[in-house]
Amino acid sequence: MDHFTFLVAAYAAIFVVIFLYVLFVWRRQSALEAELREMEARLKELIESPRSDEELPSRHP
Amino acid sequence: MSSMVRKGLGYLSLALMFVAIFMVFDWVPTEAEQGIAQRIFYFHVPCAWVAFAAFGIVALAGILYLWLGERMWDDLGYAAAEIGMVFCTLVLLTGSLWAKPIWGVWWTWDSRLTTTFILWLMYGGYLLLRSSADDSPQVARFAAVVGIVAALDVPVVIVSVRLWRTIHPAVLITKTGEHGLEDPRMVVALLVSLAAFTIFFVWLLTLRFAQLRARTRLHRMGQEIALAEMRAGDR
Image (cartoon, rainbow over all chains, first blue to last red; front, side, top):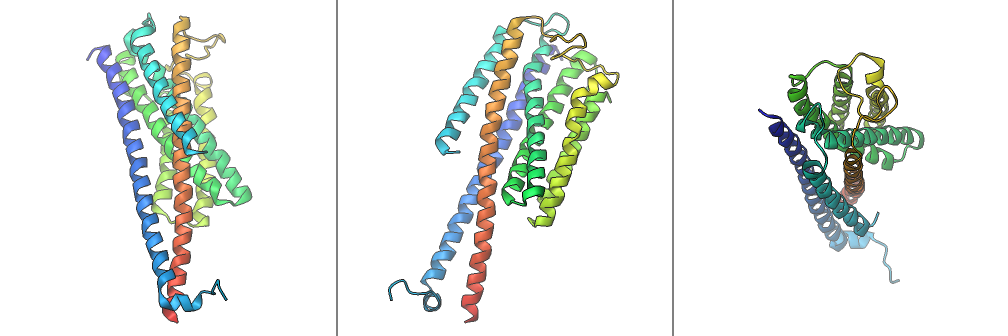
């Protein structure tokens, strides 16, 4: 292999590794957003359930 | 940091990366001794700089976590360790691809290479610990200690070319106290690359840190909701 091949390989390695890490961060962001949606749904269910209504203090006496 | 500022940093680092690539492949003169392979240097050094800065932040965040006990510092250390590991891997990869055409070998147990490899192994251990153990304060405390101890290797890597016999060039500051770059264009290209990588690092760190903070808050919220669900189920 000539020197130019090593040069291109080094720069390609840098961009491939950086791209893979950014992809990993992006996927984590999507997973986090899904977790947030799930938690919002659970919270909504808890607030709307009749049992919890009895437990929760009323805001309008 | 607001999302607008973070976006701006991302675009700025991308633009500077393109300028740096143009400089490396089209603008800087070819080094007389090593030829075209020496151009690996312009991204190899910034990768090392980002890795060292990231590991420095891990140590600082570890000290602050042990001192103040606030979860925020643990999240910052974790984010910095992850990014430092990515760039330390790149240092070893690009170094190997530079060594083969110049030294004739992919790897040699030279002082700088060996100390960098030890650094990589130690932070690899740190990340393994974080990914395999739970998020308890005990694990965070242990990780903080590992992060601080591992960072002690960073100054050893830097001074290794002066302490021991080595074939690794001391390009930035030679033994005579000057820099080893023969043409001013080489210095400019290196500075542009350093700026691009530093801004990219700040962008990545703030992004990953914000994610880890959000994850911590979500877990706490999840625990509180589970507790409320259990109470509601009991009654």
